[in-house]
Image 1 (tube, rainbow, N blue to C red):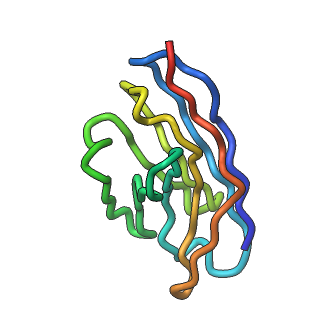
Image 2: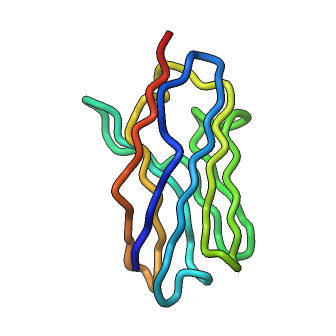
Length: 114
């Protein structure tokens, strides 16, 4: 399984970014997909998860601001991030869980700063 994430960058507080992740490999279309982030000095945080049938879970800190979606035909998972805050600054990783084995991509940096 391979994943390629894109879409990070520098944005001002209150701004928006959209992250995209393309996954390839056996079993991806039926997998759980999602995003987690790693901020300096903090534990990794699971941001959003979406199952193959569309069930979604968000961590509390992003509820109402972030939207996760997936395209099962294209094996892609996106994360629309709105109302960004400085505390959202982190490296964001997409991941898939295939037969209970997690795979993640190389990460994309999101910096929220004025």
